[in-house]
Structures are given as C-alpha cells and as structure tokens.
Length: 347
Ligand code: KG4
Ligand code: ZN
Image (cartoon, rainbow, N blue to C red; front, side, top):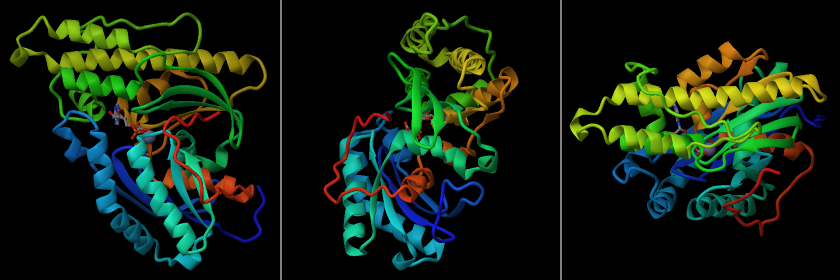
C-alpha cells in the first residue's frame, strides 16, 4: 500500500440500522498506524426496546434527529476542521433503506459542500476492517479466515488480500445475532437479546437442555431456526413466571457457540491444508462480543484468533473509515449519484 503523504484522515458515517455513528480515523488500514481520533455512537437501543426489536421508521426518524450532533461531536473530539479531511465515507448497505438514506444524504451534502471525495462502503466490509483498528493490525498476513457474526449476517470468508474475499459459507436462515435477539425475547430478556443472554448465561447451566446443533451437511453453512424452535418448545413446559431463564440462556448460547466454533475450525483446517493457507482467524460483528464465543474460539482453534474490542464489535463508524482507507488509497471514489443498496453483497 503506497501513500503520498504521511497520513490520510477520513470522516465516516454509519446509519445502517439503529446506531447513529460518526468517526474520524487516521490511516485506518495502514499497518501499523491506525489512529481513531474520534468514535461517536448514539445508540437507539432504549428507543427500540419497547418494540422488542428495531422499528425501521422510528430508526430513520431518530437518525435524522441526531446525525448532525453526532458528526459535530466526532469532528470536535478529533480536533479537526473539514479542511483537514481527505474523504467522507459512508455506509452504502446492507441495512435498512430508510436508515441508510439518512447517512448517505448527509454524507453527500458534506462531500459536495466541503468539496471532499465521497466513498460508499459495504457494512460487512466495515466489520471485517474493525480488526485493522486493533493492536493486531501489524501482525495481519493474508489469507485470513474471517467469520462475520452480527444481527444480519453469519458468514465465513477467506480474505486473500485487501478487498478480496472467497465466500465459504453462511447462514441458511436466521443470522446468529437474530437468533440471540429472538430467543432473548422468548425468555423475556431486554432487547437486544445478545448481551442479555450473554449475562444471564453466566449464572446458568449450559448442559441443562440438549438443544440441537444443526450441522447442515459438510458445508460451511449454518442454520439457527431449528435451535430457536427447540428453545420455544422448551419454554412451553413452564409457566411464564417460572421460566429457568439462566439455564435456557446458557444452553442456547452453548449450542450457538458450538456450531460457530465447529464450522470455523473445519474451515480453518480445510484451508490450512490446501493453498491458500489461512494465517489467522478473525471474528467480527456484534456477536463477536460474546464472551463464550471468544473463550471457545481461542481454546479450540489452532490458528491465532483475533477479535475487535467490544466497542468495535457492534455497529460503529470507525470500522467504516478503516475499510474506506485502503479503498481511498487505491484511488477509489464514489459518484455523488451513489445510491444506497439495502441488500448490497460483499462480493
Ligand atoms: O454488528 P451489529 O451491531 O449489527 C448488525 O450489523 O447486525 O450486531 C448486533 C447483534 C445483535 O443481534 C446483538 O444481539 C448481538 O449483535 N450481540 C451479541 C452480543 N453483543 C451484541 N450477541 C451475543 N453476545 C453478545 N455479547
Ligand atoms: Zn453491523
């Protein structure tokens, strides 16, 4: 990766779901040297908790309300003016169309008004580049086996270079985070289900219930809908106020983690034998914050396993800036006609 000047500073905006986020990052994907100058996240979690999930129209309205304040704060905390920026990056998709549009339109306005290049970024690629914002960045060597586990995605990729991915497998139904959120709701836990189940499981017995582990042949695909149904069936055996929440949470979490670890280990072995050989495993996305997942991946895999810190696991704009960095250096720019793409694929 070549650079004409010593640093590149990117303001990134992320509004794909229910977090309004803006960040300024210097040298996002250059190893070593990424510096997060600011990383502001206004979460709407409390707002959506009453619906038990994200209410799309409420989400986009809230983005409109707070986005300028979030961006101003990101610029102030970075102690920079717009003249100091090289580029405005924004999440283009995948995500909720109304939410994406808010970030995209504000980014376009800033790019036009401040005469800065615009760069639309894939949200999944953002999660993948969150690893370049960690202390592991200088050690990253391609190819890297990457598991993206979030509310919307459960996908295994072999990343062979910057921006180059082989899709190995993914979920056939619910994403892992979606399963956590739905089971959280079944257990009467606060939204989002992931962190709630993670907490409840610490006081539960993971062997209390034998929940199914969907193997989905010998591919690298996942399926979580059968597991969700099994938890639903187990809850029916109890009066609602007598649910053994901690045991159900621990047993469910153990089943999800077991499948994620097994498939990732299988993929790591397969690609460790033939070329190209993965040098490490990266886990990114909201579910990568899960404590059991981290513990088991590190314990059971032979390759080094790396995760972002929790603040960079869930949605944030610093990761979007990191993904934008190397694309910017490649000379990539987006047109001001760029549209959002709610189902944008990574490859
Ligand atoms: O990456 P993210 O913020 O948004 C998407 O791109 O979808 O991921 C959000 C998901 C939610 O489903 C949430 O329940 C899950 O990540 N999550 C967790 C944990 N923290 C967040 N799942 C399991 N354990 C956690 N500690
Ligand atoms: Zn995400």
